[in-house]
Image (cartoon, rainbow, N blue to C red; front, side, top):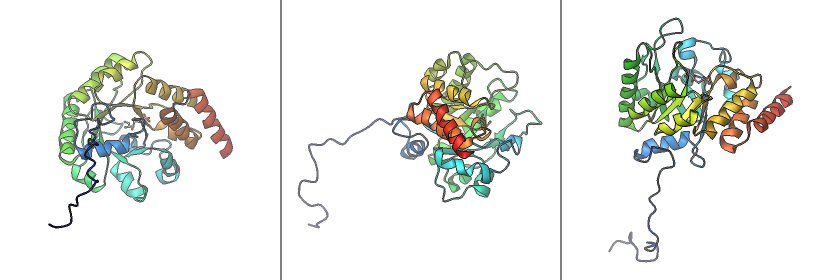
Length: 292
Ligand code: R5P
């Protein structure tokens, strides 16, 4: 007999092979590649993520704070779990040796001068694979003028990603005339999840946010929205996590802060350290004072 299979004690017949459930809500039935990419986005120790969103230029050009991504944003990357960006910025500015997981903005079309819901899929899945991304992101405009098309765009991206094990993050966009309340976000996030999104980015609302996270069968992360005072932004992040969010995908409240590094670390302390907002604010202030 060949010697490859030796008799001995290494079969551990008395130790059953474990069949663990995957740690992330609604993701247990996904394939290995999907789960592996999601596990690079969400920390398997706590199921949470701090995504740094810098994709704003895809529809509004050189957004305040993002004029020079190389100078202003790259120093923040070591404190983020994930970088959410466009392929243009990734190829032009982000060093390939920076091994941070990438969530790729894959929709676009209209600028801020036009109807924003008129988006299309703006990237081939082949290029996402070439760039080694961990997930794609696409806007869904529930209640918007081009609602149906944006939903179908999302389903097409989900289908393309499923072929190659690349998850899709649906982004629930809010139109100018749409109400921003729990009822609206329950509707928007649930539609995204029902139609295949692997996780959903939405906005925090003061009243009833826990019903939004409860009704969505996949993880929810929150966008930061417009810049607000630092303590308010930290409170929002804390409340969102407390009410069931699996993390943040935050941009302006970090890169438009007067101390982006301090905000990055303070948000991290809340999301991964369960720090109270007031304590996290102290951390932000300490870092801000050190940099003066
Ligand atoms: C907006 O559509 C972009 O996708 C941003 O990624 C998103 O809004 C999060 O950024 P912010 O925290 O600045 O709202």
